[in-house]
Image (cartoon, rainbow, N blue to C red; front, side, top):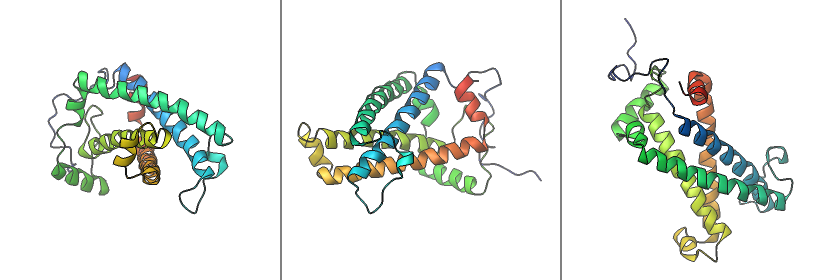
Length: 212
């Protein structure tokens, strides 16, 4: 008897053929620029963290960027503009083109629990690269939310005097630092899981490079 996957009940119509465009050019370009910006911000952020740790540990210098605090700050601010502007373009184009609605909606708690359980059992199918299951939808939406939280908390730290309302909204300067760190940690966790899934389903990398 054949194994029934969580996505086997999905309609077959609309499945991407080998020649169909799964990821348009603008998605691929903004995706890789977002990845670059996030990596640069995280690595330089670790060097900045080491200068004034929140906790009783430090990141090894070999995985940080900037060489010293001043250099790390320069990398961090440069990557901030890349990530902020490119991320905004990515979100706006997803909304304007309708891709956000097609790819990430609907997303229900019941569907998420069902697909997550199937993923844990190894029964979650990835036969259609043009379709996102509920786990993927939640992960990608969560990653965007974490990036927004990183930007807002970063502004509260960087321009604390200029944005007192934002600093107050986030619970003060030290709390904003903690939120910034936790958002970064969540993003790193997403990155590790994302890369692991790409290794398990390598054709998803191919579609993000070639689009088909």
